[in-house]
Length: 301
Length: 301
Image 1 (cartoon, rainbow over the protein chains, first blue to last red):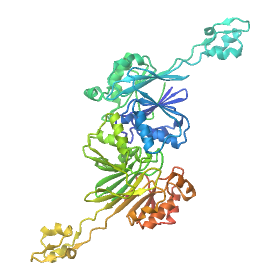
Image 2 (image 1 turned 90 degrees about the vertical axis):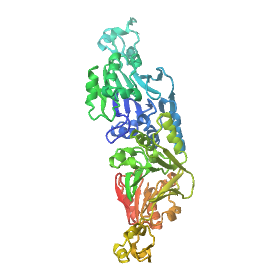
Image 3 (image 1 turned 135 degrees about the vertical axis):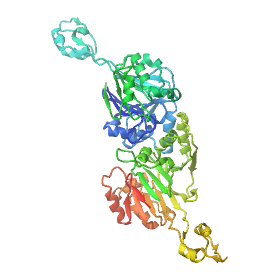
Image 4 (image 1 turned 90 degrees about the horizontal axis):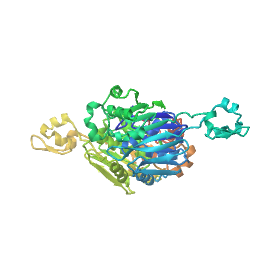
């Protein structure tokens, strides 16, 4: 899993500040998470082959998280896209996009498939052979979901020496990797775990933005490999969180600690702060393994 | 009048190519013309005090001309705008903007006043003490207007020596500038033109994008100080104009010549061309006083 931050700033796009968007690569499959204005330009700048994106997840209908979506959809048309595009987001997103395509007489040449979200409890919204994606219900001023990406376990790894010693024909190796017990050349059934190693541990990524401090999400994101959690404010401006439904750096770290995640990445910084290291310092008082998001920064998970 | 090109490229925004947007300054009053994705960032980069914009004109509902509008409207809210904002554009633009504000629960704190356009003949859509703005009906794949900005005549200039010689009290100077005949100290009525000079000639600017070659606009834009006309293609790709309803550089120059305009600026270049000087060369074979638009270039009119 590789996470590319395309934008990590709150509110309005600026010359060197992109609003929220991220690209998650899970074994070659690209998922776009949120799509603030200018995301298509950020994708070009990051040299990603973004035509390969097949699934876009929109957390909520505030501009800094989705105003770039209609432009990206239109650009896909101009680039001659033929592959289906799946869009997951709050109810209403389909109407916003289709109204603009209709009035511009600019229907896409590819299938645009909307998965509108309404439920207030976590649900599995996408599953294929590599990954499962769940919603993470967040508390914000409008209906908002985070997203949890869980890699499915990979194949077991062959212990070649043990398999040869056990006299297993190599035509059975694929079955062994899939976890099956197989017969050897003498007709004896060999237990899988005697001739294979377990797969690499599965990775997981949780995206939580925008949200008020919400410990209810802890069970959903327990022990994830990487948690991105919004940190719009510092504790000194905690009074702004109640009204705006955002979190402080310390609160993000508390969630990370309670959930026992491996790494925490902070983002969605308010433009009122010029020194973002203050976010890092504040969070580290609670959860040491914290990093800051940065536009175009890449995190290997 | 000063024209700042914020973006002059067709289709999709790219790292160094902004879609259509322009800022026209008429004696300190700022008019925004079209608003492709990323316009608010281009406004910041050009160091304009863009909060002063009170009127936004949208030519048509294709993405490269208006996808940046909703973001700019939201940013004005975040910046604490209180002044009314007038938006002129095709019918449907109000529904697109208000739907997004409604679903994001993000109503503006200022008045957003839509002037939806439907007529197919030129009409006066804005008039104040400095300027008149008319639509220029264009021929494109969707309902499209260009816009003509005509400065109103300024004040007449006082011929101080002549006024003193004619024994006019200086309390009458304001009336003289306004064009009135006034009595002198001896009670004799002095004709205005004997003691004033004519005002500077009024400037005018015509914005014509996007459009198929359309000589019907010639009478509307006759003798304008500056004509911006789209030139999406070169003559070698003229066959693409019929389908896409765009113009070639030569056709733009033909319009400029027929209308007897003073200067022509070409823009809306297709991304298929790497050498834009070919547009200049082609246009100059028909109309010599041609220039190329360029993102962030400023034209004094």
